Image (cartoon, rainbow, N blue to C red; front, side, top):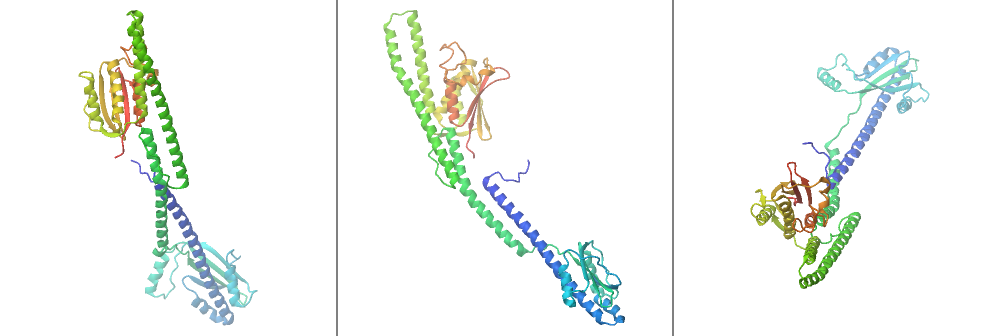
Length: 461
């Protein structure tokens, strides 16, 4: 299983993005702060070394020639070396050494004194302690040198009054980045504040969006639902309002159409009844029998249309049922040897019981009519229940597997009431299943026959 580092929920993504932005900005801040700190420390160390070199130059200017060696040895240390020579060690000034030169000229009191300075990086080199260095301090010195990273070397050259040059080399380490617990405390506080803000914001946005998703799911199942409350930010409120309007329009559209269909079918009953009465007054004959068969077929179509309209109206309240029990009862109602249901574990679903019974009964009746018997099975899948109703009949051409779900389309074309109904059984079944948020499909079996597969969504839990 792959590890998903990026959260999938809106709240988790918002929190992750805010924390990432906080870490990036704080990290850049620490880098910039460390660079400024490094520059400040380097400048302070360089100014101190420049001041020291200027004072040594003044001392050499005033001291006798025979004391110069002693002065240089006294001023030198493991990290700073003072030497005299006829030529300057620094050929040209560095770009960032003007402050050092100005500091030396200020101490020397001569603005025209020839002073040169340069700073450059230098690979760490062990600096040996001079002879006579105390043993206790020698170990400390070696430890400090062992921990050296990249070093900086400040080279200074000052022309003395005698005409020769005082050359100075000063080594100091690049200051390391230091992060103290006190520096991390503000970051932790900001992260906590960002997490709190992200949580509150996500709850204001995610709550209404989840309600919207639940409302859409209920609408897809055909369950009666009240308009969703308008909560959350403006954009979410506008989306919820648009959904409520869409739900109202769809409900009115379906209700008007089903009422119209039911009214037409109901009104057709009166002329059909009158026609049946007149047929009874006529003499028996071939034409009379033919007319009576046509009236019966029209009566059956009217009744089926009324049933279709009632199934689409979706007025039945929802209830919780065990699909295994429902299918076992339907198989028993079909009669011995007509339908066989393989025992299955309980599968609990929230449905409109009478409507679902009608849909499943239509599918079972079709399997019995065209395949002599129905084999029924129930399997629980992730988030859904799969019901399979199979037969051993002739099956259907692949191009008719979808067409037979349309109203008044039948498996066979004889139009005989002995071989098929009005052609609304599968249409009613599909309408009811889709009203539950599910789907029904027909498939030809590899070993012959046809099977209807019904998938009904199950509530999470």
